[in-house]
Length: 130
Image (cartoon, rainbow, N blue to C red; front, side):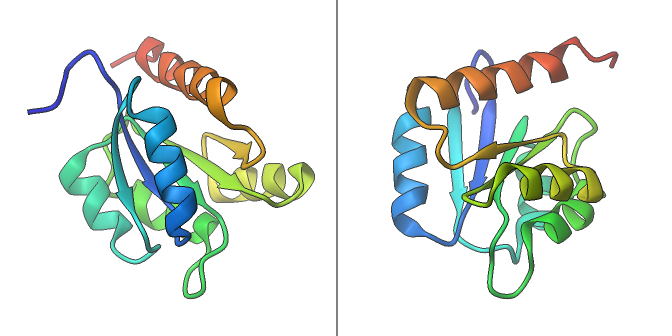
């Protein structure tokens, strides 16, 4: 059973080192589930019902912005999709808008700053009407 006080974040990235780094950073503050492929994200979102999905943009088969469009159909309304990439900020902002993502973060955002920004995204979702 999930800890009700901790938001559940699904982190999706095909780089195992990046996944582990983000998992270790977030684990004290959030319940974290990781996934290494763009494939299967829709099913995970439907079954796990995360509060936030932190989604890499660059996958070999399917781009993260395409995954947002597909997975959103299966996600609870409260789920926020955040694009996460090393791409430059202008490109990331444009992809987030085009895909319907709720926001974006650069992979240069790490540690306490990453926790702070994800907490802010969670608070936005909690204050939304249910």
